Image 1 (cartoon, protein in one colour):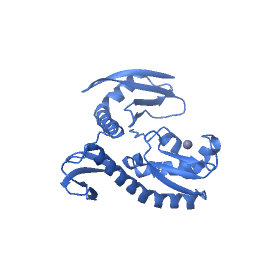
Image 2: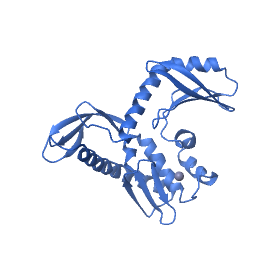
Image 3: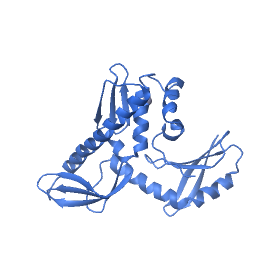
Image 4: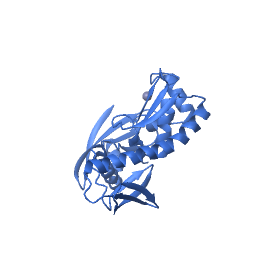
Length: 238
Ligand SMILES: [Zn+2]
């Protein structure tokens, strides 16, 4: 059963979707980073006013998550500016952009700074293009190690993998060719979520569908993964 309440925040009223369920013990609050949807799961018999009080007590956290979601929207629409002071999360770590003058574009991280060298009059598409190249390299380096690790642990082997510019899917697995593709957008998420996507795609070598056989495989290696990650990289707060 789903119900919607609305709560007041500094940015006006926002809807909160409540699902009361049997078999859960706590009230859990989620903000979906992809679109900023705020939802709550609560025990079957819990009182809606108590849920409201709980949600309102977390309003500062919710607003913080909504700001992150807005950041994510910007990223999706390629509206990152890459100018000094902008914050960008790479594999769960936050970096502050430091723009430098440079004839040839180059990106490196140093501590919590992401140093982006580029010519002064560079077009915004070029900035984006170069950043995505860098993202792809970062993802390749990370995925190389994690895929090898998960292949060894699960005994499932893909025939090859690649990274690409996919904005609607985190990953894909061609069950015929056994090739895996990973989205460069994964660099904006946590290392745990990258692990989940890799195991998810490898598990498709067992079943093409998201059926029990498939999730048994995923859950064997990442217990709780279905609840935690199947709908995207949610960030639960208890
Ligand atoms: Zn899948």
